[in-house]
Image (cartoon, rainbow over all chains, first blue to last red; front, side, top):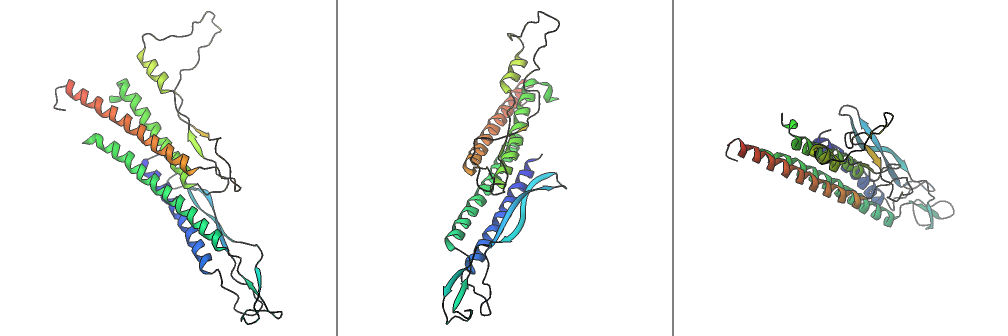
Length: 135
Length: 135
């Protein structure tokens, strides 16, 4: 175990939180993306989950993306006969994205990202304390 | 060579412990959103007992009045090992990492590392003084 390994672990943590922020912004951007054809399915909210992974080359336990998934909750049906994606009865299916949830998710990802960043600066502090012996 | 001086040995162990704990805490932070991950910590060796063992004189030991009696194994010689942190709440995804708590532990661990490093540096300057080098 070396202190540099701690930096590798923390940056793996930052990387996965970055993925999470990216997905949250994808979801937010597509919060009103309806189907292209009448009666079709609109944008489905994407999710991501993490897992602890083993880096065999360095014998380190990092974190990475376990899988990308989609949210299977029901779409909202909105009555809008003038909409190009409206079905025969005049209803349009809207994406199952809830902006508030996405914003909270993004906020939490940002918090975890900062915690990892702090872990890196703490590692730098430990290394500096050690190097100070040489001065 | 320096390890044969007991204080260097002791401080070295303290530093190794601080670095190992730093790695474990960093891993906790990186896995702050990993489903099923439980925060871990390192059990601290009994450094007080190590000091007592090295002080030698004035040490109280259990008397053996029968050959079948066995003295307890000396404290602090076993290496640090990971223990689970039981106090943290577990989320729906089975994750049990409290970012604030981990950040606090990380900071106090860095402080302890710094103190041990300061003792190490000071003792080196004592040695330099003793051999007549300009400290």
